[in-house]
Structure formats: structure tokens, C-alpha cells
Image 1 (tube, rainbow, N blue to C red):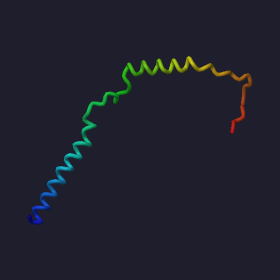
Image 2 (cartoon, rainbow, N blue to C red):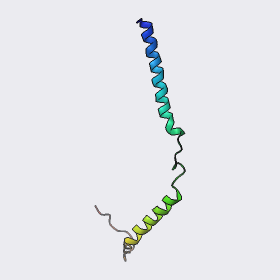
Image 3 (cartoon, rainbow, N blue to C red):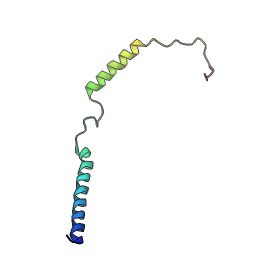
Image 4 (cartoon, rainbow, N blue to C red):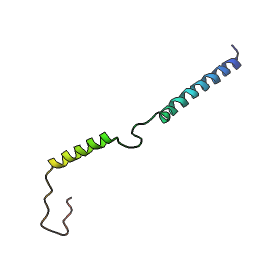
Length: 74
């Protein structure tokens, strides 16, 4: 096999690999991403319920009777 045939085969193989790699990198851009526009209404409702449940479990913070500046804890 001559050197020119080997070089041509390598160039052909490289072109095929570049085409495969380009295709694999461009596929995600062409796929429909369901959450590209944000969360679905069902997800928003579930998150709202979760936040409401968490908020109802936590006690209300005690208001300080002392107004003004407070020291910063170290």
C-alpha cells in the first residue's frame, strides 16, 4: 500500500470522525427542550404547595422588643 493511499485513508477517516462529532454536538440544540421556557404549571403548583407546607411548619420569628442596632454575632 502506498503512502499516498494511507494518507488519503487517514484524511477520509478524519473527515468521517469530524462529521460524527459535529453531529453529536449539534443534536442537543435541535432537540426540543421541555423546560426551556420555564417550569410547567404542574411544577409551579407543586413548588407553591411545598413552600406553603414548609412555611406553615416553621414558627413565626419572635419580634424583638428592642428596636435599633443590634451587635453582629461573631
